[in-house]
Structures are given as structure tokens and as C-alpha cells.
Image 1 (cartoon, rainbow, N blue to C red):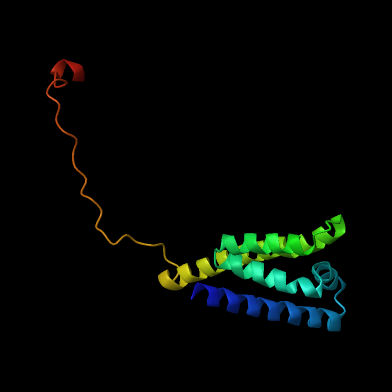
Image 2 (image 1 turned 135 degrees about the vertical axis):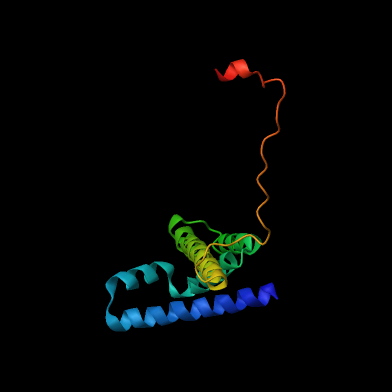
Length: 141
């Protein structure tokens, strides 16, 4: 079940990144186009998979994607490794941010913005035990 949820999240993120790339190209948004060109269209899948894994707290899948990406770019040229690891790092940041956003939204939805209240009643406050040794009236003068 968790794998399917991660896969669906990856597909939705991949769709959103592709739509953003098309809109940025049509609107001539140079900044967004520059950031998306650093990720490259072929690496959108790495971005989406890593973001979905981070969103669903699957560290093992993130590590598998890192190892797989490094293995696929084995003659390790600095430019190639940066272009492969940059989408993975961006995906981890995006997935962690989305996870925090979803967690906060669910908390607000559950509590309607109120702070969480304890189900139990608070324990009764008891007076401290009376100590016979320190009961000397001369101490109070």
C-alpha cells in the first residue's frame, strides 16, 4: 500500500513539474526556466521519485535512488554527477517540505486550529505532606 501511494505521489509530482516547465516556457519566465534546465527533463523522474520517497518517509528508497543514479553515471565527471545529484537533493527538500505541510494541514483539520487537549482529567493537586521535624514555632518568629 505504501509503495502504491509513493508511486502515485511520484506521478503527481512528475506531472506538476512538467506542467510547470510548459507554463514557464510559454510565459518566458527566465528564472523558472533556468532552475528547471538545471534539473533537465530526463532527471524529472529522479526528482519526482525522491520527493515522493521523502514525502512518505522512505529513506531506503532515497538511498537506492542515489546509488542507482551514481551507478548510471559511473565515469564520474563532476558536471555529470552534479546534474544527477541535484534533482535528488531538490526532491528530498521538496518532499520534506510537502510532508511538513501535509502534517500541519492534517493537524489543523483534526483540531480546527485549537491546541490538542488531553483526554484524561488533570491530576488533583495535593498539599505537601506535613513534616513534624520542622514544626518548631520558634522558626516562624
